[in-house]
Image 1: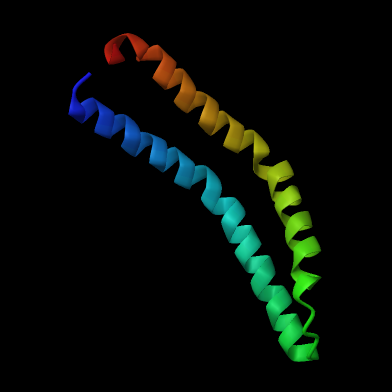
Image 2: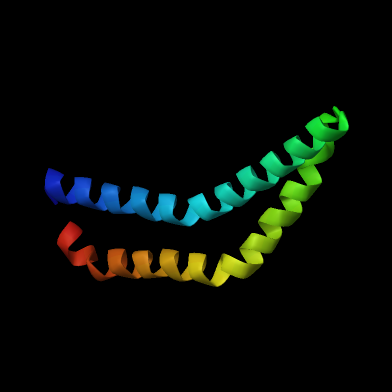
Length: 88
C-alpha cells in the first residue's frame, strides 16, 4: 500500500464522516438558533433551556435519517473490506 492509497482512503473516510455528521449538526444548530431567538425575545436567560429541545430534535433526526446514515457507513465499510487485498 503506497502513500497515494493511504491518502485516498483517508480522504474517503473524512468525506463519509462529514456526510453523515453534517445533517445532525445542522439540526442541532437550527434548533439552538430558534431557542436562542426565543430566549432573546422573552428575556429568559436560562442556559440549560436548549439542552432538551436539541436532544429531542437530534433523536427525531436520527429516527428519520438513521437508515440513510447506516447505509452510507455500511457501504463504505463494504468497500473497504472488498478492497482489503489491495491494502496488504
